Length: 128
Image 1 (cartoon, rainbow, N blue to C red):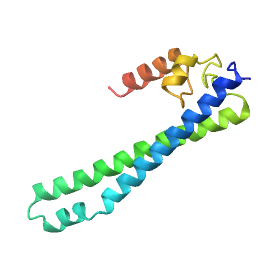
Image 2: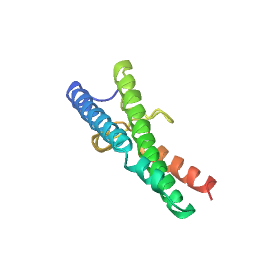
Image 3: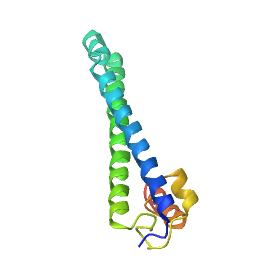
């Protein structure tokens, strides 16, 4: 059961709603930018492999931004589920409390600082 009081849970829900709305707006903007024809016009007007590479890079960057926003939106939805089941503010790895200060800065956080640090070190070490 969450260690947070009702005021904190309400504040967390409001922060998650604001984050969700911002992410949805960013996704819509990125999709609009990808549909504005600039990338397609650039791709149609390329005359050499270098220009084609730039057009591909722009398309890939736009897709990567959209993907990042979708991942963040998924984290928000998971945080909502944790709120609804009474587990918001509990670390998904160790089960300990996530400090309120962390949740204020990262309302979709699912790990305490110690577990998040360990995860980042593990993935950084594996990627080298």
